[in-house]
Image (cartoon, rainbow, N blue to C red; front, side):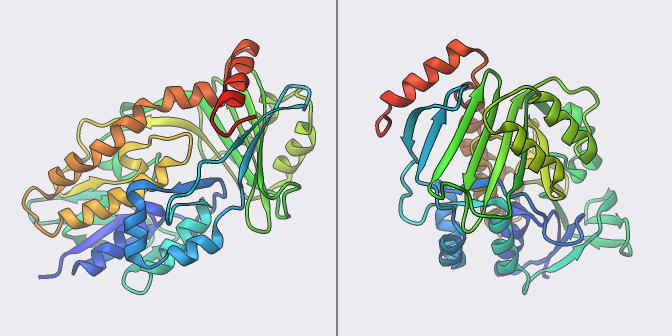
Amino acid sequence: MTKNVLISGAGVAGSTLAYWLARNGFKPTVVERSAGRRSSGNPVDVRGPAVPVVQAMGIVPRLRDAATTSRRIRLLAGDGRQVATVRMPSNKGDEVEIPRDDLAGILYEAARDDAEFLFDDTITELRQDGDGVDVTFGRAAPRRFDLVVGADGLHSTVRRIAFGPEHDFVRPTGIHVATTSFGEPADHPEDVILYNTPGRLVGIHPSRGTGGVAFIFRAEVDGFDHRDLVRHKRIVAEAYAGVGWRVPELLDRFRAAEDVFFDAVSLVDLPSWSRGRITLVGDAASCVSLLGDGSSLAIAGAHTLAGALLAPDGAFARYETAHRRLVRPKQRAVGLSAALLLPRTRLGLATRNLAARLWPGGR
């Protein structure tokens, strides 16, 4: 009998999983809170274990067409002077850097003809027994599924309902990220420009035909609500008040933008990714990265889960054992990534910049 699988979240992990489940003989349904494709233009990588997955999906040409145009990283001092230039890591084979919303859109388009998608809806209740899971939705009629997968990100609804409150499993790092697109070409289409002051970074990143800005900073934010857009803009403005270079202009763009992303950088750490007939994948299970690795891991994890389900006995355990081997090193590296990206002191910045000049390919 064909198994019906409900996936919560139509992002990178959810659409990848829907694609592979359909090809493995399952009947996937994807529920997505947003009314359409979610948007977050910050660049992410498709590398390492994700590459053979997207190759098998036949989407590499589309990923290349949407890839960013960045070739170099230019590091600027507090007064705006260029202090180091570093070549971007070379793409190997079919590896690409791509805006997250483009990646999610390409994956969705690969999956949409073989999966049911329910947009503008969410799960409100899960009740499972030995044979299946009864699901209540916010808008659609209740339905029963053989399995439920939470692919709904850092603030996963499935994880909250089936595993417990977010604060039990999510560990904030004290770092926040805010991004938006310019809607116009970047001034330097091949250069990622990083401007640092202690504990703060502003990044200008080129894409194809447009550019975007990212604010990454250390801050303690009380009562954080990841959906409070008005407060997000106020937090960013307060964090960068008095910072020079082009920051006032970029803040004005961010405040005026309607489509922005803002969230706390956090690690997700659960003792198990599964409860009965419910499991998690992607950031919902193991949010890991400051530097774009999360999307590659989400693609690889979704593919591993879909393959494990072909032999149902112990499927969730096999998936988790295999995928944790990829996740653990990335989670351990978050502290180092933060130290390189956001040095806390002027001495730390000077040391990072000197190391960048001495790095192979740096000057």
